[in-house]
Length: 146
Image (cartoon, rainbow, N blue to C red):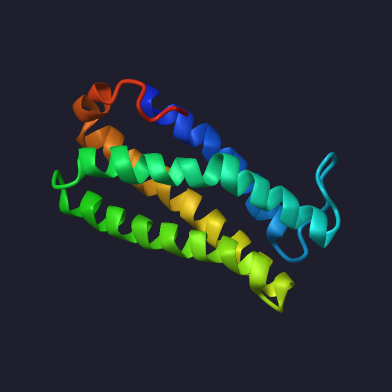
């Protein structure tokens, strides 16, 4: 299904999440023009966390979730799950800088990011487009990068 115009920017950012996820996963193939060393991968992941992932999460929690909450019980349940994921993602990035077993922390965060994006794209966004397109229209461009 084609993304609603107001969700398209978030979907494009999700692609960047997936690149970071793959980079962090244990045993993932090497990618051209992406870091190959653990310190390089950590730097790349932290840079993208600060510039893309963290602001993305903040916009979803401040704008999207409140706009669609209370419309449908399934949407509300997904919001609850996604908010939990957001906390785990933020904790995962903090762990990258402090965890003694950095490879395990990287792999765990990579899988979490992958699962989170797939849940948002395949379940949450699909449901929003079906149940509340009129609310998405009212969001205008507020979900795009500030």
